[in-house]
Image (cartoon, rainbow, N blue to C red; front, top):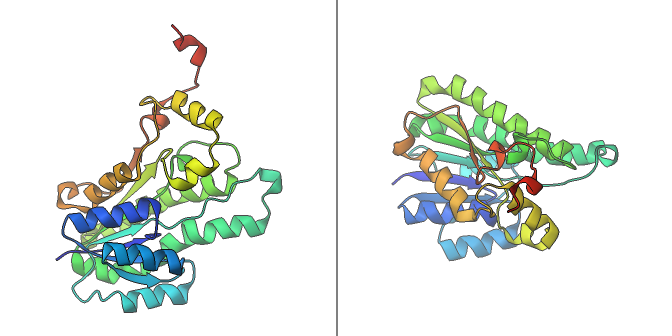
Amino acid sequence: MKTALVTGAARGIGLATTRLFLEQGWRVVMVDRDADALAEAAGQAQAQAICADISIPDDVARIVTEAGLDGGLHALVNNAGVADFGPIEETGFDRWRRVMETNLDGVFLMTQALTPALRAGQGAIVNIASISGLRASTLRVAYGTSKAAVIQLTRQQAVELGEHGIRANCVCPGPVRTKLAMAVHSQEIIDAYHDAIPLNRYGSEREIAEAITFLCSERASYITGQTLAVDGGFEATGVGLPALRQP
């Protein structure tokens, strides 16, 4: 049985990815720092849970020990992240570091610590960045920069780890209909996103999970170093001119 380790697995894209892996017959190790949410999600999914903070080196070392990867690791999904938005002038170094330590440092620490297990399992890495790593947007100086760095880190991983049979790819979700997004997006924001996205809708957590599990599978055995925007065409669009599209 193949083993996948998913960070930020207690909710959202991480939980949807966990469920899809389980449907496909994988064993899944779920990692999250929210103990209560993780316990509930893991209980429902019947998967192993490890409560840990991926930005803390000692926690990462504990994950490696507790995950039980004697048979190797076949997929590492670096999904954990924080979204802390604010204007550049109001982004203090504490906010900057809070975003970077999880979104970027955590991806580096997890991959480095699990490279031996990935080598043993001829495994795949999928890092979850964001459309904000491909195109700039307001209030995302820390978040967008961290996700752009994850895209470059993915390329580094692909180049350096390929000789060990390890593939590394990056998924950049566009706007996704998560509970959190729907709680904070006003109808005006929703309408604006719909207008800017060629498919005219938000994506679903399941749709992002489908792309992630594909890149971890043998069907993607010759794909590495790539960045896949799963965004309904959002990244492909130029300057929006809604008035020109009116009948």
